[in-house]
Image (tube, rainbow, N blue to C red; front, top):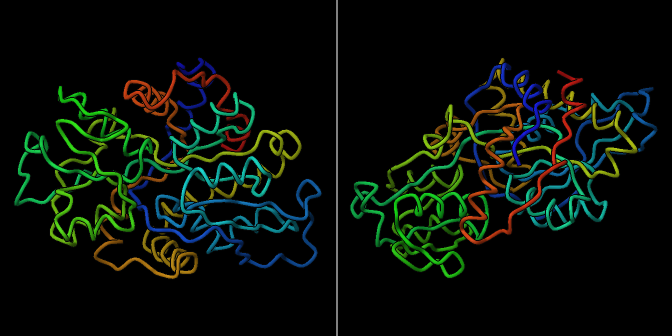
Length: 351
């Protein structure tokens, strides 16, 4: 689905915004509600709502909501309407929560957004803004793999069948002229689907020779002696590709546009604050990550991971289209109709 001319004009405006090299992808907690910042006395409710329910992962690829939660930026933007939070481990559960009305707005990766939109026939969600780019690397055992050609015949982990990194790796394999059955992962390269929580242990034990993974799993592998063989950013124009977008249920967007605009205002403001205060922002994101998951990232993992991601208000629509095409070519997705998946009206208004 090529972007419409209006969308391209919108993105041209957004693309002019400054970007910051940032953060990475941690491990998350069970989905839970977590109320932090207090409502200011006498503040008016936004759109007459008692609360707005915001979902995100306990991952630093979701640095914008982590920081906005920790610093109270969402609550400030919503006034007398309470900002409530639900933290997720995986995209499908967040899409399910959006569909059921358990959350109103969420930060999520491209593959679950595409799958959620297409499976509902385009009726459940809209992408209303961008959040982050980058932060995905191929990390390998340098004793076994010294060049990209050496990946052939090896066992390489990805987080999940059909997830964003799995699709990217399968596409890269195909571009090398190698053959792999997408479902089984067997072929010229053995693709091992392994949860990010256990991949470092699998690498340490030698059951995988490397992994195509998001941060901070990539930096955890480097801390185990792995070597970054390829940064996925190098494969994309201008080294930018979407890793996190902002979605909202269509029902909520239609009924409460002022609330959606307030959250987007807070998101854009948070990204600007991160740009101006990178060290404080990194500490705030890690503090919220510790609160959400029970464990902060150590400096030797957090610092390099933080450097590999850019926060951005641009949803990077062209790269989402490309990621959908890669999933189709891998046989993991039927050709999707993504017409209407974006509604950037309110983001453009904020900007």
